[in-house]
Image (cartoon, rainbow, N blue to C red):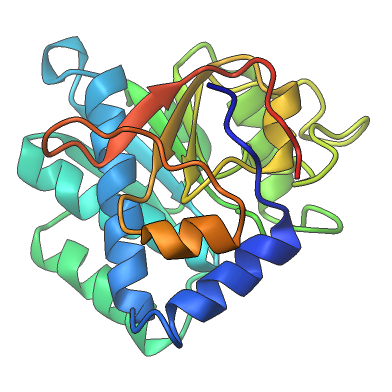
Length: 237
């Protein structure tokens, strides 16, 4: 089944509705998103393939999802390291950071060095709200993600990609095609250009909310918070 996609504008509207009439808090949504990301890592990188996970976090909600995912990964038995150069002063993000610090999860300022000491990378830099130029210190980081031979899981969007128009024609993200993508809640239009493994995460939408936004609810199995789907033939709303 080709899953219909959700534009950036509709994704923002859906998030707002979930936090108003849907009665979810942003903490809940971030926790569910990060849990989904951690399960995708577990599918892609079983513990016996290497436990070292480098999580690159941006300053917004995408980065928050990465922080949550890292906490879950620690409890699964992985060894996460966090690259979080633009740390938000928002109280929610500070709490997520403190939770990791209490677990003795290391934070690094040297992405290049960390890249040489990991088995898998989570790209949680920019999500569906990204637009405009990639600003420092992220150009070099995204170039490194593009050039690495290590597997990369992108959260909601490969960082630097336009949500509607896909990969950039120039700049650090040109040619960046991560091994895997996890779309949160629903795929975004950029999946038309994506050629890796594709997961959907976000097992919390009500059937009524999905119908209102014209979304297809995938069939999740048992306790799974993610489901792998085809990448071809995505239908744009």
